[in-house]
Image 1 (cartoon, rainbow, N blue to C red):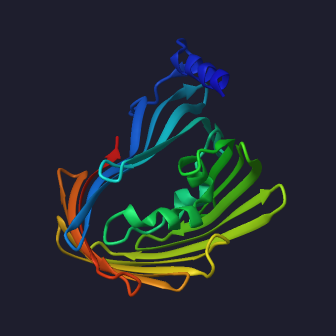
Image 2: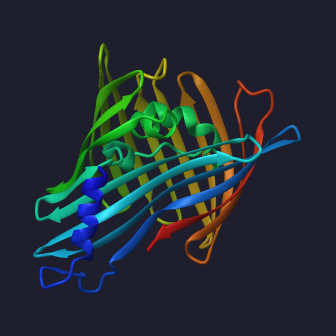
Length: 301
């Protein structure tokens, strides 16, 4: 892996006519988000940080665009006294047939079909992330080693993605294959995906789907999933209304293997990429509901 990354850096740093910066584009890019939040129940509060970002370097090599990217996923809590992070370095090349990546790519399915937040926060989504994004969470939560390849492309107006990963730890190893097919019609979008895990003595598959409607002023999203990690299927329904350009009010309901969670939150945006929010969520399984407050920044550079 180290040799591959060094070779990619050498290509990107090379000079001459074969390699050049794309016209009108920066050679450095960043995308993703970071968020810091507080959750309170009965006077007790806990903090939580969540980050999912990608930093990259790109340029032209002949008539192809090539790049080196470092994905980072991190979670942590000072009051909970824990922190975890995972790195996903890849080299990639974009051709007329699509984008090909190698190294430690992220799950193709989970990159397209996201696990919904709960009242705007990520603190209670850890188990659901594992259930519907085992490939990435095995690296983050379980510390497993990973390497693989990924393809992203478009055919006939449909976006497609496919990734293959080898996962290993001291207790065993396995293979993960993930994929999705989706389409964006403007106000309406949908995608279906799968994640298949093949272990030494087991074979399991997770299926997911999402349908969204967004006209700017209001919108909704339905997300469905059936994971081998959970005893039963899951679904989440979210709706929002935007009374002001900078203010979004959301309501959500989720049922995860028979456990229901409902929540509301209001979120205000500032400086284009920043946002702050407050919310509340509860469940019949909770003795008392949770109040939430959070702030974040979206990277799109």
